[in-house]
Image (cartoon, rainbow, N blue to C red):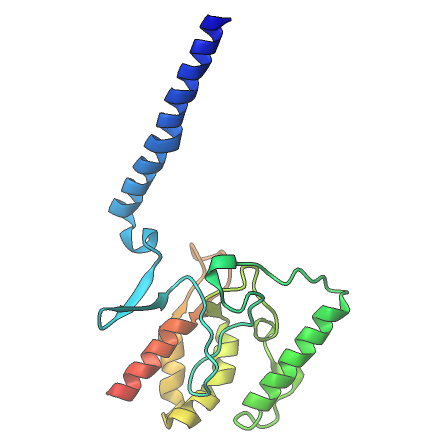
Length: 194
């Protein structure tokens, strides 16, 4: 019995050192060597100050900015979640209609004839994490006229910035193209300063 106990204690110590300390340290080291930007949170800096991450949405509400998807966690990266409302849930229908009404009110003056059917689905639904940093190109283009008018930029320039900040499908076939909202808004700010 004593021999078995000693063997078990040694196994716990060795396995803790190997898999609890060694393996995580090795993976962290490899990640820092091969993918340091990504391993450190894909942070974006401007003038030596971190302004956000490529991987987490921020709340933009001013009319001169591209707005992100709605968030079920108020864009809090510390507690990601989704609304978890099924398609037959009346609360989901209410949320979608409220959001659609807000978009019609905000974008309608800049997009004459805009109807609820013209609003992309990602504009009225949350993502699985609640902090998806991307919007669809269709949602970004819907916002382009407002952004151009408020910033007094040519619409073509805003559309060009949208294209420049659109990433394609992963591996060429997974997922959908997306516009990184933070990167687009930073590019819009750079236009203001030039």
